[in-house]
Amino acid sequence: MPLMSGEVNRVLGGGIVPGSLVLLAGDPGIGKSTLLLQLAAEVAKEHSCVFYVTGEESVSQVKMRADRLGIDGQNLYILTQTNVEDTLARLDEHLPALAVIDSIQTMYDPSLSSHPGNVSQIRECARRLLEWGKANNVPLILTGHVTKGGDIAGPRVLEHMVDVSLYMEGDAVSSWRLLRGVKNRFGSTNEVGVLEMTGSGLLDVSDPSESFLLDRPKGAMGSVVVPVLEGNRALLVEIQALTAPSTIPTPRRVATGYDAHRLLLVCSVAMRTCGMPLADYDVIVNVTGGLKIAEPAADLGVALAIASSFRSVPMPGDFAAVGEVGLSGEIRRAPQTERRVKEAARLGFRKCLVPGNTDDRACGPEALHYQRVDTLAQAINMCLPITRRISEAVA
Image 1: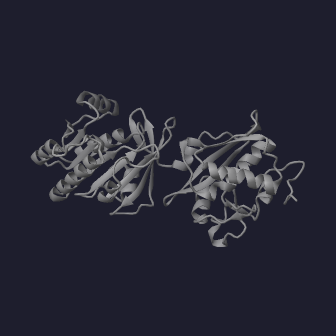
Image 2: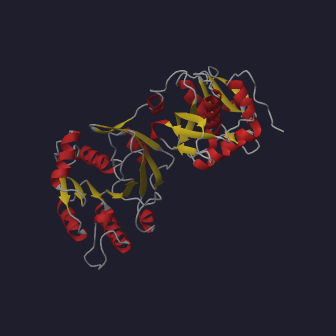
Image 3: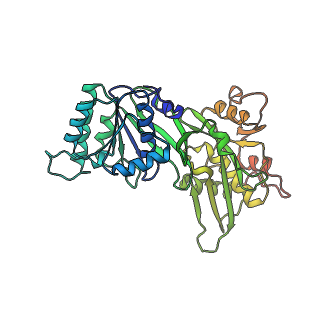
């Protein structure tokens, strides 16, 4: 069952498989219900019956959201129900082309004495829905709540039961949303969809890299572009850094969208091997667009952004950087460098900083001039001209 949304199709591996059970999880307010209502309405255009079962909203609330999204509701049936037996009875009666359950934590089986949301209730309701979907060859999509730690609330067996498990990520103050597949029995899990939350719902982002860099100011200090990998897709993101004299005895290290432990590592290496006196400075790093970077290949970009802010020297506007920073100040190779460099060249970047031991075949098109660096001090000296060069090593 292919969908019109190219980004959702990308993550699902081509569409929704009949009889499959899909779990969509994410933080509250991230847009799970909005996305599923849009998908249900899209499927309803091609089929005579689609069910949207909600235990968290009333019919009037769903109708208000549908009106805001421009959904006419034809062939789309809204059922406010939390009893799994009654829900299955209505599904048996209509045999829809697709059923959405929002959410699995609100469903309950009356044969069990526990409350909705209990581990046993979630497990049993999911089992009954799974069996019904397989028996009738009807795909079902469940939404799931997440805990403070980012895990799906409920038993771990729920993730083992489903065929596809998706996570929706994003910052509460940003319009960008990442749809990430963490399990897919019918396709690859190395795919990420990029969506934008607008007044008319979630829309596909056709060129994520260009969108992420759209508001990047020219000649800004503490700004570096880094090609990162999200699944099989290379994206260009802007990393910003700000250094300022600390007003407290223990300087702060604040990271938004970047691992705080790696920020401590990069700052320590910069102080030890490059002579940057950051011990009395607050260091703040931000990945623009609300994105979260988990890979160490962004280390070099973070270090250059910090150095740019500390030295008050802007990075060249046509520069991108990729590489992992080691504890002794060496720059290590990043996986799939060729894909990253090609994405930078596509967006018009003319130079890219890569680790010194990068294979020639991974350095991308000839139109992009790549510069090899072996150490962090060498990279800073090359990109940030200053009156007093940073020493290659500090005794």
